[in-house]
Image 1: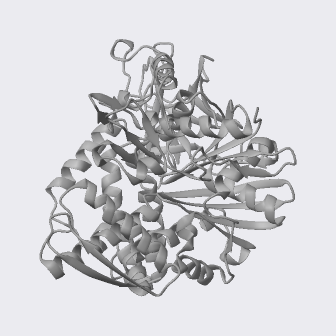
Image 2: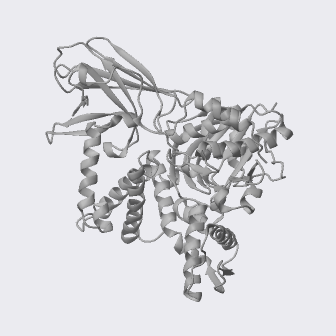
Image 3: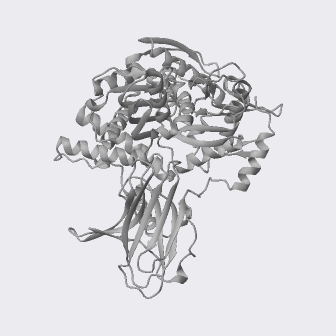
Length: 496
Length: 110
């Protein structure tokens, strides 16, 4: 049995690694002989089989092929309908995980427990969906770990570095930035910041628009009329993007699917860099945000580490070099280090000091004595990036006479403005009648090593209290019974 | 400055029974909900705004003030891009574009 297994469930590629007896992690290839499996699922119409990986990506019908499902892990309304059955993002992800489990266990032994990586900014629902996907695939999730944390663990292990590291992880769909202190085997995360929809596939989409424009200009026709051809051109833009990381200029020819002629695409690296400048500026903001969160300056960073396929873009490297005044280093194979780090994390988690992924608090009317204004605000009890485990208490006062029930909205998010945070739960506490306003209520949040959050509300006057696990239970979360039923169904499927 | 716990319950009869943490959907009718609805309605009626207006950047602001404002907005809307609220996610993308435009205008291209 493989005891320590890590899985990088990526937007475009997924990989599984296990820890060998000598303590080094190794990527386990799938049954097709590939070290990484494209995160693509094809629902075959002639045979009762689900294809996962390259076979699914390179052929088949677009209407039955699912790409980049990870982008929808927190969207309860995103359902994929195939042959009358509606598939949730968690179920599609479960098919990818099943392929990895089934294929890789033939090489490394049975896989029962895993560490799965997620983007640093994955919200509560996306994290829950990831755990549900693993359970449906027949694996227990030992821990979820942020992708840049896993990559940093691998970097520290393989390079034997010491000092303060900034990990810049730009993958297929997300950008994560983590700052951590490394001293031998001991790792202390200082902050993790993430940005959604900022990765290689966004660059492909931008290039696709440029191809469309060029084609229209040269032929007067649209480049594609259906999804099948759009996918083909998208693949061509991805290839062009990769070439532009090696060459200053690429030439390509494209045709549409209605015989309107051929157009010649001439693209320089400079043009490409201009096209993605908006995205890269966002990534600079994120780096600055991480530095601010950790109260650091660029000069305080000893090593800048690149992770993820999109960090092969030369502009990404030069941009970071300009900020930090030092050359960023690659974390070995930038596509594999997250899975490798996850396998290491499975064993070393007790030596890794993590921080809260988000701020937790409650909605409160806050009175400003200076302006004499009262405003509904998000009052943070545990700030993001607090080292875990931790516990924090804030005391509030009731706002009205004769309140019989105290209601505490549980929020997730850093903003003081209540509009910009998620209310992920509510806790209610019955209190005795006939009390004036201004009774004190203590709200305590605790965050443990397994990233489980608990909320405790204590009415100080009556001593009554209530404690609950803070967990998102809204739309998109499957009940235990439903999860069990779908797991059973999925395990009986043919997945190749 | 002190904090008052927001509590909408005025009598036992009008409140839900004490129970475990409830989903976000349960917030319908809360003060936050009303605040959000008012903001959304106001936004609908307004004409399109320039990036300066969207970011609250005025000509009188110093470079440091502009930088601080853009950092605050980026933190807010980058987080909103992962919100559980789909409307907020859409708004976030427009705001992030405006924030980038303002940065390039005031501090140059990367």
